[in-house]
Image 1 (cartoon, helix red, strand yellow):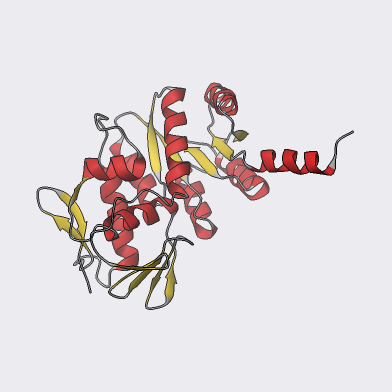
Image 2 (image 1 turned 180 degrees about the horizontal axis):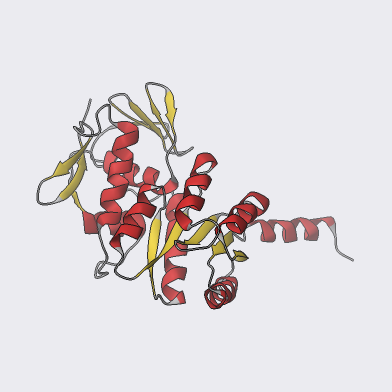
Length: 254
């Protein structure tokens, strides 16, 4: 007979299993990803088209969504757009090799990362793990070099960042950021005045290895998204600056 304490322990164990929604119209890909992700400890739900993906999203409340771009009934762009109306959960898009426009469009709509087809399941597992960890992380920043920190709150100019709640305010108005956007902002703000290359940002925020050859435009798109949310004039940014020949930095503001 199971005791109340044992039931509680079982429920706690089940609670820590994160749920992944995989949406792809290719049955072989769904089957492979479902099997592999379950093997490494995730609960997995699948969908074969965009409409079913949205239904499963609303029904199962996943922790992360993996979306193929080209799906029947509703493509990955439409699904991403609908999810971002109400949720900031991580989204990874699956995109065709060589089609840069697909990647950029998906990122601009709010995806956190992408994996290029054909891909190895191991690569996707690594991306899922990294995005989940960084989207809820509280330890990605290196020692602070600028900004004012007090009781888990960073204040710089009119921007206030609550690192405990992972929330951002501008003039006391809440600004909605995805987990990866927050992690990127936190890295830059905690090191105001220090320029980071795109590769360094990918390593700190997305956990890409130093020798990983990847299209660094994932960083550019996320910077653009942050500017659109934080800057008074995104076309002429005053907070998140481009460090010519290097990458990006946050302007030190007292």
